[in-house]
Structures are given as structure tokens and as C-alpha cells.
Amino acid sequence: MQAFYESVDIIPALMEVVRTCDACGAPLDGSRVPGMAEVSLAQCACGLVITSPCPAPDELGAYYPPTYYSYIPKASTRKRRVLDKLRAYKGGYPPKDGSLGRIFWKTATSLLGNFFLFYLPYCGAEKSLLEVGCGTGSDLEWARQRGWDVHGLELSPNAVEIAKKQGLDVQCSTFESANLSANSLDCIIMSQVLEHLYSPRLALQRCHQLLRPGGLLLIAVPKFDSWTRHAMGNYWHNLQFPIHLYHFSQSVLERMVQDAGFQVREVRLSFKFLSLFYALRTMKQFHILKRVFTRPQGTLSDVMLLVAERV
Image (cartoon, rainbow, N blue to C red; front, side, top):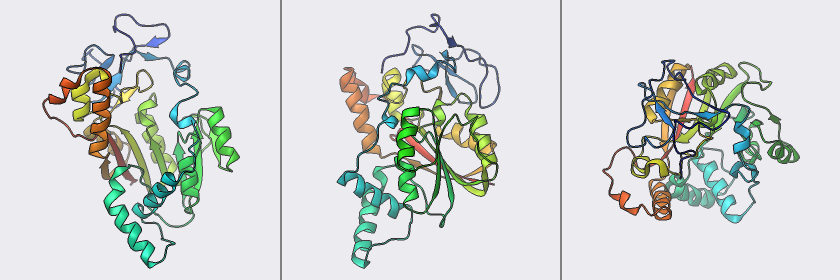
């Protein structure tokens, strides 16, 4: 992963320097991430890492190509149908299989359930669900088929059109300006979204406002305190300059979620060998395989899913 621009002293047009930390409000003193001084990452004393300079809000959309992965519909393949079944058993949904089928799928889930992070626990029939950044709605459709009353938000008009053709209720809107009612939701999903927002703190506060007491918040983000990030530095495949505006360690994300009025129920980590595969592939691509001998620190998993409950 090449740095988006070469020097923080040469700021492209319409780039903005971030002056204060979104998590704690402290002024940023110019500290950079150790070992990554060549890329545009400011680090607050509280631990939050910020892309600075970053694109102006009106310009950020230009950095998302039409081929962005969440804008592409997912085909219904045999592999996907198997994965959908594993997700349902992992989430505890009432099974529709016979006794032998239940034994098979429960066994398969116990063996393969950690290969993916998508996790939406069964919460009862006709519960309301909002996915922020839902893309073309594939996960919403999965949830709808399992009894959820689903709603989505997405910025891409083309992706929204695809979702609506499936009969899904999706608004083309930012999270901040969406037409949503307080205390109206039982679950909010933000999968690979929080790092794209200009104020994760305000987004988390709005999640608390929209959820009913006891409602669930599911957040998946790249895990900055991982061995793959330490080893790969500015080549880390999860940096994605300049559209990833914030970078979270587990402790920072947990603290921000708790400060917004949630209780963290659990943190799930991505499959370790899959993270290692992506790391080795990137190291090979950029001819930096010697970095595999970097001193172990952090977790091998480089994506985390945090499950929290509104209190």
C-alpha cells in the first residue's frame, strides 16, 4: 500500500489538516505513529490514530470508484449459500433442518464459524435493524429472510437502486442527515464503516439515540494494534488512504463505545490464518517478505468485530 501522498508538508488541494482528536477533544500536537512517519497518520495521546491531512467532506466521495467492493452485487453461489447457512447457525437462529441436518450444520459451524466475522445474533421475531453503509443490501437481505425488519443507509445512488430493486428499504443518505427516529431500532450494524466517518464519536452517540434500551450495536473495523500492521507499516492492506479517516486499536474503540453509553458484550477477531495470508501476499507484492521476522506484537488478527449493548 503506497502512501496517498509523499509528505505531510505538501498538502494536495482540498485536503484538510485535523487539529483536534475526535475521541477526547485534545489538540493534536503533531505526533506521528512510531515506525510510520512517512505516511499521514497523526496520533493522539489517548491512542486514536487519525489520517491528517484528509480530504474535505465534499471531496471524499471522489475517492470511491464505481468498482468499490460494497457497490458490486454478490452473486448467489453455492459457496455463498453454505456461508449463509453457517451464519444462521452461528447466530442461533431457529433451524429449519431435520435432526440429522442440525447435527451436520452445528458441527460445521463449530469447525468453520471463525472463518468469517459477520455475526448477527437472533433477537426474536420482527426486530428492527439498520445497516449503515449497506452497499447493495446483501446482508440486509440475509437478515430479512430471517425475520428482521430491515432498513439501510448508503451513499452510492447506484448501490441504493440495486438494493431497492430487491424490495429493501434503503435511504441514499449520510448517517448524520438520515430520517430516523429516536428509540426506534433494536440493532445497528456498522461493518467497515466507522473508519470512513468524519466523527466516529458523534456517530456512536447517534447510535445510542436511535437504539432502544438493550439494543445491539455491531461494529467491524480494521484492528490497528495488530502484528500485520506493525510488520507491514505503510504497506498494511487495511490503511486504504485517504478514505480511512480513523484507525482504531481495540482499547480505543472499546473506550469510545463505552463513552457513548454502551456496554461492550464481546470482541470477536478475524481468522488468524486469513490475516496472515493477506499479510504475506502483500509482503510478496511489495518485495518486503523479510518483514515477516518483525518482533511479534499485537494480535495476528487484523480486523475486529465489537458487539455492544445500549444501557
